[in-house]
Length: 534
Image (tube, rainbow, N blue to C red):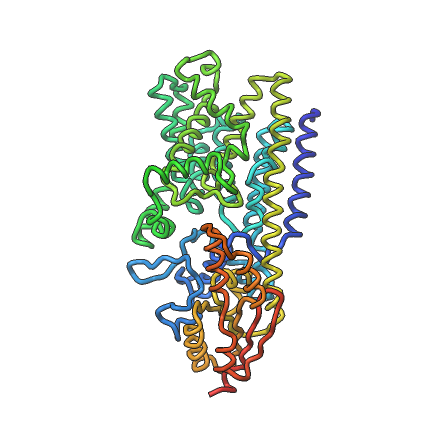
């Protein structure tokens, strides 16, 4: 093994050690992204239903058939009346072993993020297999937003791994001359990503569009390469057809519940669409776009586009693999912002563009190989150095966010109760994975709270009830800090604070024997088992 090879393996080994220790030390009981808890709840529902139905379970169905106090907001009501989750069913199935383990031993949900960590390690192994230059390999590991996903229970990395695995099995130099069946299988693996992320539809369509573009532009590859590409596309389309058919049969819509949940926010006009392009590409405010994470990608991605009509020798010298990667990536980046339901650029980066990240690094690798100069190496070194601090900073934000959740949760974690009632979504999600382990409700008004406790007392004999409310001093302090501020963020924050408070005096009046336990940020009002009351 030569020196660059030894260096690449050393980078890989050290990176694996770092990410594994960081993952072990993270607060996986809590999630910076509340969608993770909703996805866990879907898996929980599958287990509770004995794998016979994916309908979301609701512990209060017997006392609240209308779902007035149902804590799960992200659900879709189908034509047949089923209430299902908006997230991928396939990913929920993969998570069910962790639910079963947790039901048996009281610990297991914390390990569900392995479904993100393991695909990340698989992605890194594939990048190592592509023999990226050491500096670029460091950038591919740490200089983007992929590794930030590994701390969450999320399908992003699994979908990305599947698509990149299929891509590698077809376009890597070691597999280009494989037979038709091999490329058919590679396409099927590539297409499997659609069971986890809708963006995989666009990724597959972009490959088809790239093939058509190369033919129409006079850059048709040799017949054997085109035939293999067609088998790849056939494999991808076959899996896509299976997914569309299963959605139609199960949900009554070929795009599934995720589309049904988001369709109201899609195609919001020219101004909003242009804003989404800007945010996804470059960011806005505290949101960071793809080219902020990967500025070096601009060079190999758009220079060939600008030079296309000049037909320079450089363009003609590109391999079929690089040309199809380039055109498919450009098409993917052009189409995605047009169809997504929002800008998708939260604290973890522009997740809707995640399928462009790894092909982007292959394009950078190819560009570097054609320009093996010292200037190129210094340029890559510069961008490697400046690309790593941003995701590291965002990871610190992740850690601070989960630490804040833990601080609030610690105020009521020591309370043992059978049923939990929260005032709003924020304090509900602060309970972390315990929202799955205990019977939970959300009562957003004092009148609703008293109505709910009355129903519970008549139906839950012997069950204790814990009512969570924001600490009054914390609420007053926060309101004082926001006084006089008229920004949209300030108004929204003030609304959340006020919605997190319940009238303790009113509750004590109704239940004189209730115990008021004050915490640093959240209080708990504990009601004794219902059998002690009329």
